[in-house]
Length: 178
Image (cartoon, rainbow, N blue to C red):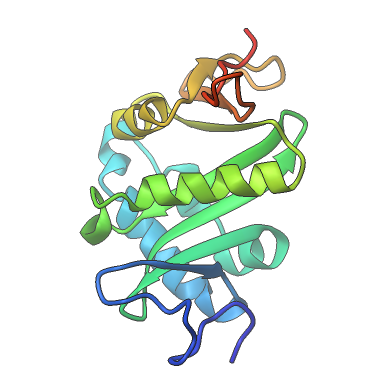
C-alpha cells in the first residue's frame, strides 16, 4: 500500500458516491495532469491561451509541493496543490474534473486547504485566478475569499483573493485586513 492511499479494508475508504482525500504520490502524476487539462480546457478559448496549471509538470509538482487528490470509485476526481510564498499560505491550484463539478468537491477541497493552513500556523489563505474565470471567482467569494491587490504581484489578467481564518467572538470568520 502506498503512503496515504487507503486499502479496501481501510475505514477511510469512501462509500460509493463519496470522495476520499489522500496525499498524491508519483504514480498519480499522469492522472492529475489529465484531470487538470479536463478541468481547465473550457477556459482556453475564453482567456486566449493555456492557463498556468495546464503548463505544469505534475511529476515535479507532486514531488515538490503538498498535493492532495480526491478520489471516488478509484478514480481521481479533484486535486488541490498548496504552498507557501511571500504572501503566506497559498492555494496554488484547485481543479475538479468536469464530471464531478457542482457536487461540493471544490468546497471540500477548499476546506482541506483552510484546515491545512491553520495546522501550519497561518491565519489566512490566499489564491489567484484569471479575471475571466468567473466560475472560480464566484466559488471563492461564496467561501469567504475577498479580492485584494498584492504589492508583489501585479498582473492585469489575475485576480488575487484572500480569506482570513481567524474566528471572531461569536465564531464567525473575520474579514481580512484591508
